[in-house]
Image (cartoon, rainbow over all chains, first blue to last red):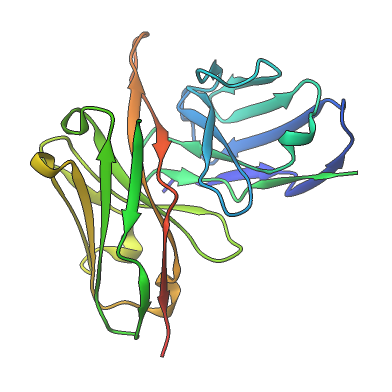
Length: 107
Length: 125
């Protein structure tokens, strides 16, 4: 199975900050990498698919980059509604696997 | 409205069984692969199983193989997860999720673009 390692596991940031979350796959996964946002008690929400494609309706302050094994989710200017947990997920080979999540908290 | 609504969760004893359902509406259910994804309390997301549009292919995470069965009824726009021989470690919120894909390039890229709110399964004596 492909292991997904996210870092950091948590971070504290202020509104307006630029935030970067990284995800590393245990083997090459091309651009088969997705990012989700989850708020407490809610279902995950797709932000980015295929490493860098912004899902319809998602604000443009979210962006994704990377290919191969190393990927990044960037929030260019953190907004109050962005405080949540973020997960990466690979869809290169089954079983689909997720990273352990990065919790973004208010500083 | 495009949505997925899960049901069937509850409290069950170890070794027991439970059947989850997911009702789809607002889109052509029969055109999509569908998945179950679970989340143990305070933990991360774990993909459990998925099923092809016509039910001819099914895949499972190793930890549930031989105990869980995914199925679908396209006439009823419904997805199911039959869970047998339940263990304490199966305690989780179970989400159904729609699998979409992008093949605008040379490869196929799969992702979960629609999720239900989830149903809680608690395995405890």
